[in-house]
Length: 93
Image 1 (cartoon, rainbow, N blue to C red):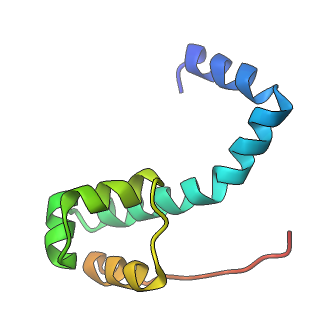
Image 2: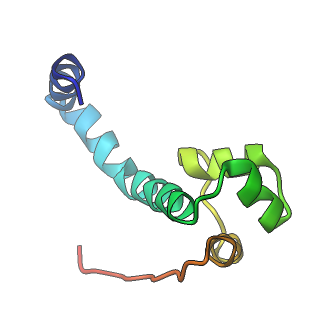
């Protein structure tokens, strides 16, 4: 992160309501980061991954943006298409 972007982020997160919303979305963004990492490790573009999954590039983009939460079925297809293995963990809050 650049210094200016980091300072803007810090200022925004100083607001309690903004921080609360940010934390609430963190898990969704973490999943999106995992999906992107799996695709990149597999050396695939969004279009190539979409072809393997029988879907569209725009559907992959929505998954990777965190705008759409995938079903378990979709996660399993994503994992298979990227040569990955999904791992689900539930931790105490």
